[in-house]
Length: 266
View 1 (cartoon, helix red, strand yellow):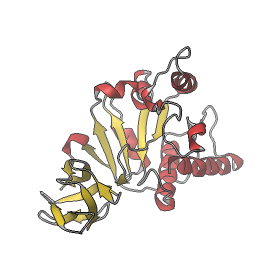
View 2 (cartoon, rainbow, N blue to C red):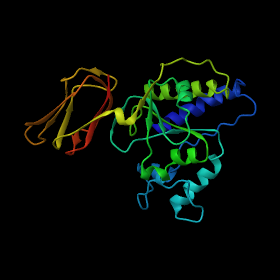
View 3 (tube, rainbow, N blue to C red):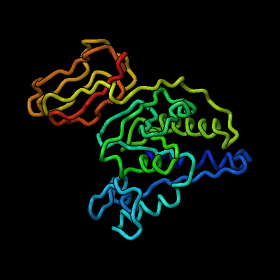
View 4 (cartoon, rainbow, N blue to C red):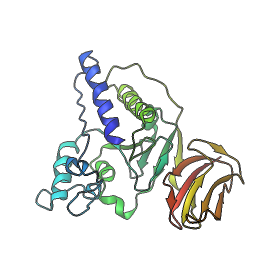
C-alpha cells in the first residue's frame, strides 16, 4: 500500500511539474522503497537476515548491508525541512487514516493539520524508537510525520487517493506547490496513550462485527473468538466505553493476548 501511494504521488507531482505548479527554491524527493530486493520475494524485511531497515537509522556507511542502506538514505534526506514517512504497521490490521508525530523537543503538531487527516496522534518515543527514521529525522531538526492509510499488505485505492490528496494539501499549505487544497477534515489531536487497547482473551478464529471509523456504544459486541475446529464460542469482546474504532485486526486467526482493537474514547 505504501509503495502504491508513492507511485500515485509521483504521478500527481509529475502532473504538477508539467503544469509549472512546483514553486521555485523548493525540492521534493520521493523514495518509494528502501528495500527493492525483498519486494521480489514479497518480504517486508531484508531477505538475508530478516533485518528491519527502519531499525537501522541514522545508519553506518561502514557497517552491515542494512546499516549502509539506511546510512545512504539518511545522508540524502537528513537536511530536508520536512519528512513524510508512509508508515506500515507491524500488526496485521486496518487503521483509520491518520498522521502520527513522535514527541521530542520540537512542537509542530499544528502544522500537521494542513494534511487534512481526521486525527493527529502524538506518541512518546520508546527506547527502541531511537533507531527509526522518524526519530532521527527529528534529531536532525526535520519536522517528521508518519502518514498511515488504512492497510499495509493490500492495496486500498480509496485510502491511497486520500493519502496522496493529504500530502498535496500539506505541500500546498507550506507553499511548496501551487495546488487547490481540499480542506479534508478538521484534524483532532489525540495522545496515543489515550487510545483504548483491547486484546484477544483467547486464541482462535477472529470474527468482527464492526469496521474502522465506526462509532460504537459502551457494551456493544465488537468481536468473538471461535474455536477453529468446532466453531465453539470461546470469548467475546465488548466496548468498555463509547468510542470510535481506530484499529481493527483483519487476519482470520488471532493469538491470545494479541492487540486486536483500538478505540478512540468519546
